[in-house]
Image (spheres, rainbow, N blue to C red):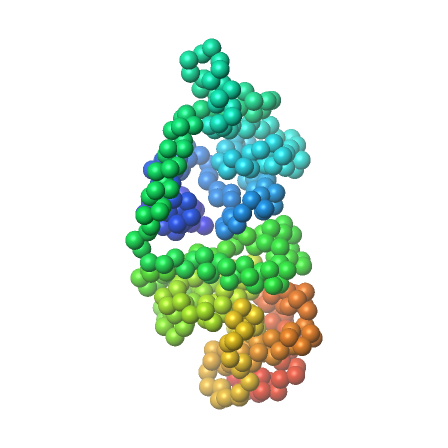
Length: 393
């Protein structure tokens, strides 16, 4: 969606560069990259982000190949007559990776693979009679273009390494920590982030990873929340979490805001994101029925609190009863008690990871589902039933 906002000219070049974490996660020259994007915006039907974050390491390269081909298939359906130009990392362009998966999944497509500055091919081409070879044909449908020598390429890389070693003058980047918390819970629940089907797994969870803001003024997030349709009252309520806990996940814009990192609360908000993502980010769609909102919020608080105990076991359990004076406080307190009970049941072996994963996947926006999940969780906790009665009656 960040690229879509830039495509529609809703955000500037500076904001695009910052929000896609170009300098943190890539760090090479921005100018040629941005020139490519501008050229595409001026001449293409659309631009899509094909790869996903965080990339981890080469052990996931085959999974990412299949994910990319699935996305290319969706692009082809949206643009049946267009020539599709795909820019991807060199490792993916090896014959046994993206080209092979493309041939298997989209056999009717004619593809041409263009490699760039492959050292071994450069030195082979250097033996040709021509003074300067600009490109060579490697195989049917595969060519390699040369626009720099190996010496130029590695000297440029050395300069980048030198610049990276000098460090960044900004504050600490908390985004990797947030992503690590999310990834730890994903592994705990045995979730496949690259699954292409709904059911026992969320669909392409890897494409739903949130943006993480830290060190930003509140006004940046407030502007984004306003554009999402959130009211001023709703926004003030949302920022209470930041004021009280130092961070908050905003499902309306699928974004984290970290003002003051505290592990227990960050773990809770990371779990809150994962619960929303497993349900397909329902906050980005229609609002829930007010009659079921208490149940939805209570279950969301319960799973968020449960996840925080998994990621940060020393967090205090919540068993005590207390006065229930308003809706959201009642939902949060009831949820914390449910989350504590759920964690205790997991430790006692009465809840399996597959059962827990199914709780995260349950579509609470479907009529009656939130109430049913709430009743199942609250069955053995009288204090929680009293909390609900105080709100409803």
